[in-house]
Image (cartoon, rainbow, N blue to C red):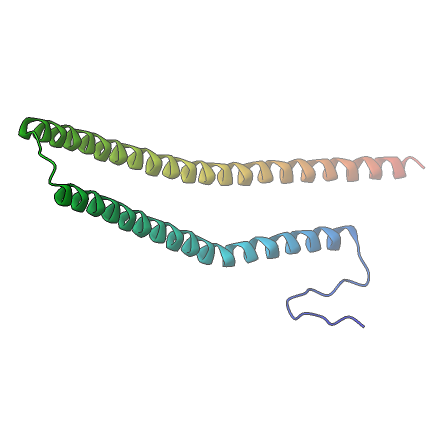
Length: 156
């Protein structure tokens, strides 16, 4: 004997074409609702993972550079001031360029996501328009079909 879960929908005893369509629609919407319920938890898990990776990367960089700094201090390596100045300036320029590139990329990504959302809204309106059009076609066809059947049955 199988146990029924409380979130399971009982199967219909007498299926008609419309109940089959309604059942398929309801089941599809139920699946979409389950995905929608899980999505925030999924998004939070990804955010947590990204935050942990960022912190781990920062810790790695701090440790690696601290180790290098201690090594240079302990070995008492002589430094050329001009070379140190040149390396520092180039490092700052590369960093500034990278920060600007990240800002540009971020804005591009946000704009792309916003465009995708707008496209989803347009698609939704298109689905509504196509549904209305199809409904009108079905109404016209069934009206025509009914009138043709009436003419056919009058002939006999």
